[in-house]
Length: 430
Ligand SMILES: [Zn+2]
Image (cartoon, rainbow, N blue to C red):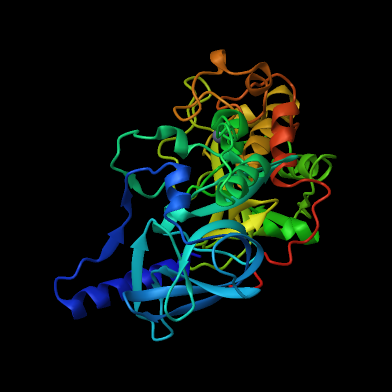
């Protein structure tokens, strides 16, 4: 979450001052090992579920975070009790003093791990080679696979053993590990998966925070609607009903059959722009007409063009799990309409404005562009469905209005599957 991160940085400064010259943060640097070497040098190998995060304590080497694990299967090593504690470097003590160990993941209750470990004298487990020894079990559709959280770390091997960066199909990887642990020698390690095919970030373009997690609204899991309002003045110079455009975009999301979304626009207005999200609390989700803060410098010009609108969610940096994926939790939304853009919004009996509203609301819900910007590349080389998506970087003005196309809807169904049940672990232990 934003606020804890802020306080962690503040306390980090305090620790730096107290320790006079100690490094403010430790980062993880590594040279990639192959799986056989990692296994042969690890006294223990277990499959386990994170039962709960137990907070931070002072350990033998510094501040460490403690997690309770439920052992599901022990593949190698001396027998362990059913529940054990795992320690990882870094964390914030109850006193408010924190230590950052950059590149070490924060675990969340409900995550399933494959853990290469050793047992410390106090009985707690440590991950062998830290982040390299922790594989997270993830799910994409029917495929279970393992990945490590090494993106925040630096590989000093420059591609040495690059194969071992790839995700691993869960069942064959586990079978290989069991066989090698039992002293058998399977022919080859053919459990690797092509990340490009597998990775949901490759499949759908989603808005992400600095921690690389996509942004998701968890309130939809309990059918709690995202309720829109807007500034009372409306868009200056409009002929068509700009407020109806918000309603149309909200309805398009709510009525999408493949996803579980509830977005409403009862029509209430606010006299002045809201205060937005900097303090970590939501004061409503608002469309701000006429760009009142000049967040989009300049004005739209009906002859020359310009930027029409921007929008997006505010979120807490978390690792909240949904459907096996870690997400940042969204908590507030804003869409700003450029001043003078009314002439464009009026176009095609208001369908052009409704399209822009649906596009911006797609960003708010967590979708990035399907193609056509610096991050996603040219639409010309994108799949046809991405070219036709309402989330394409440039507006169509083709009469579609507030409509989502097949690629948009597939992304919505990926993040908010219609059959999703409330995730009891979502925030249970934070
Ligand atoms: Zn956009």
